[in-house]
Image (tube, rainbow, N blue to C red; front, side):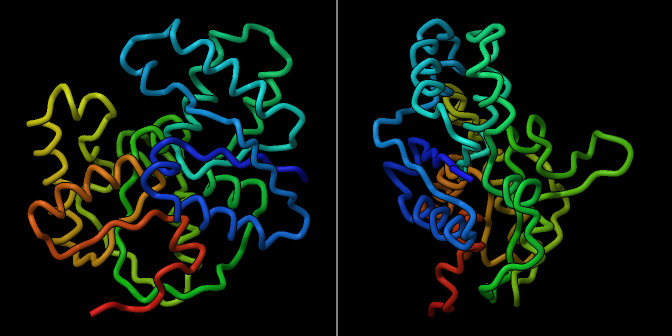
Length: 252
């Protein structure tokens, strides 16, 4: 199984340890050959979200070209994967290259849950952890439960976290609320964005979380900025780091 590793901009520039954690997780499976196209670039999501759809086209075309010939593509970012699966289609009408990619591009947790069907995690994480369900992963990839949906639902992300030894998952009062980041929304509507982020952090702290985790570094970066400026007693850790067993030792 040849698996292409897509590392989004935020992780490449600010959180490289998330990429390394993803490699470590995928390396557990002997049937996987990890392929990393070194000339990969942004998926184009920031421009598309701002309305620059035609400027996004060459980036989308480059992405599809770079990840050709692989069995799967995996990324530790729900929003970027959502961009490829749900928003590239208008650029590739009946293009066989994209059709394969569209159905074989995965956020890390759903790849582990749906494709690899993992049943256990080897490394302990002795912390109280709150799960922030990022909007794209929640409502476009259906990685978690949505409060507005009726009927049975599963949380692919939470099911993986529950396999981690010694972890304590806290229960939030508003489990699927937005953190307020929203890409350029955080720039255009700074005040609203910060207030939403503060509400999100408070919900985690009220539940007793020591750590806030999510599938998107962008959401965690937004929350981390508020936490640092306000000197709050909680920290952010990408879920890939938890599943890989990074930072398992408690710090003073």
